[in-house]
Length: 289
Image (cartoon, rainbow, N blue to C red; front, side, top):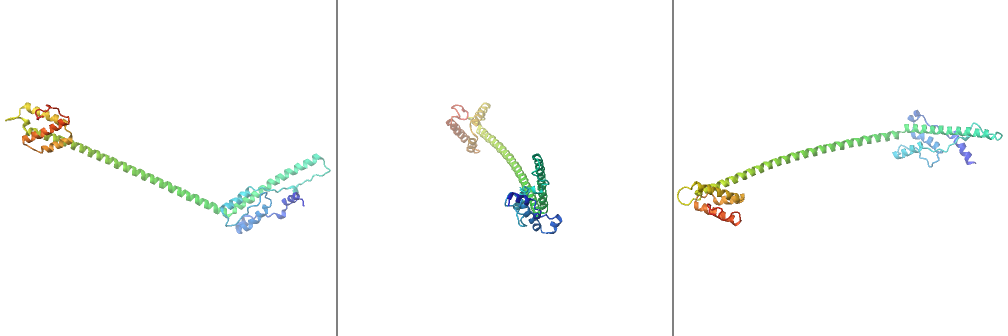
């Protein structure tokens, strides 16, 4: 009835021990039917209760891992006092009794270590033969492979998108450069055309002066002095007129050859420029201003 002595006896009760099946027996039989009794027998020595059992084929990965984690860290209350080789006699001296007690304590400690190693081997063998572990490892490998393939596919997609983006950027840059080049060329053409138009309009103005005989009064041809004076004042006039105003001025001349009409148009333009403060009084005497 002594609980301490009861536990000491149960620790070494060989009749209650169940030996684990061999690898060959397990491979030929039902794993759970063969191994469940082994762990049920060992469970009685656990300080921690309840003890997780082996389960069955339907047990999930978490349940199986919990089971093996528990048994690999098994905390046993098993002791081996009943296997002491020597028992102190009351007639022996104190030193002799202490010597025997130390000897027995060391032997029990050694047996405890051996029993822990024995249980570890049992768990190792069960783990090795457990088809669920193999299935879980295979599933894990498949998941790792799947994730690897997905990662590689994502990386490939990223690189393809990056290459496509760079290609698109290069294409857009080339198109932009081409547009800028075309715009620059068009601008140059427009600028050259504007310059040519200005030159043409100025020639028209100078031609109109020539048609008006350089504003010579009287019969005969204008003198060299009159020609120079007229052309000089025309150059000044052209220098004061903007390009758009020049276009309007040329439009008014409109290929006219009548001297009076030409003089009148020049007079109107000079008056306009005077009104805007661009020409002073007496600055264009030859042209009528």
